[in-house]
Image (cartoon, rainbow over all chains, first blue to last red; front, top):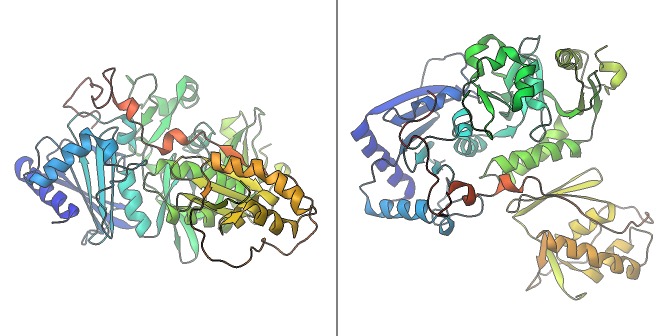
Length: 361
Length: 153
């Protein structure tokens, strides 16, 4: 029996013991059924963005979620999982890929912290998320769950996960990319009560549809770091999910629950912006090279996706060539940032935008 | 050293040209690199497998410097690429035609090749067993406050 079949059998055993809970969610136009053994992990779907409900057909992907509270009956799988979780350095590659589990159409990896096994069987569109024990997950797995698994499956659908924030309207929107602390989350949050809608603050999906790159929502959550950020967004700050967080933990928000009207599910991508904090009061936009946008987008995206490889890299090379790329020189007057972005979207992205053209005066 | 043949460490190393800049990413170290002009051309040639003299000869067709001058400048560059694990020595050379430097220009100013390396994302790329364990060390897990309940919901 192959690895995916063994996992499927193990999940069925867990369901037999703990019962089945399921939820269907549509992401990027694909219908995904999340099936849980018991109810311990059902709240993980809370972080996924909710769109308009459509009648359900056969799901495009079925995700099975359970944990190691009970061992598998199959002795081979039991021995393997014991060895994997207790001596993982012998069983996984540098990025977590399972060294002894390789089969056509199967992507499998283990993340030692927090002990999550992800596997995607592309042949029959089933996926597995198994946690080695029942201990709680770190906050980042709660606010952005199933990421390696969704990355592998959506990549096979031609849809790429991106480390980027995104804001816009039905007519078009902007990706904001850069390393942590560059200002992309703050920029996205600043748009919550503006003429622009919010797609994400950290990770979104992008795919080429009829010759146009579109961005799709993935997580309905947001994160802010430090008291300054929280003070800057008091409306959001009062809805913090983890007020008793550790010192190294960011403040997290299930944003769509509080600002449902501000969310947008998808839009055509009209540009990539690289936020840069300037210390000036005004915000303005200048063009930048595709290589700069690539360097901001690709390494951070690839680093957050342990199963990433050549396919992801090629997608990330093409995107900055296909859409205009800009540097967003962020001013200290945050309230004015959305109007600058709107100005850029409304007054045409083909023209070269400079400080005189789009500065918020 | 000059007789050693080198190659780019694919598939771990991925690279792409953007106008005059080559960006390379090493998927197993998490480092990424930026190369321009002769540096970028040399890197592309190394993907074909090349010795330092072969690189120098090919680059001298495009840049305004003699092969000897270029070869002298390449030593440190190749050492840097090796240090960054972007290239390695070829044990058994493949058969290929003469090296063709990219582009049709000639007489361009020669700037000794260098590679800009960025390592700040390394911690995100690789698994990190250290932070999973307590003071007893791996494989003992760090205890959690609540071993059964899941936060949130």
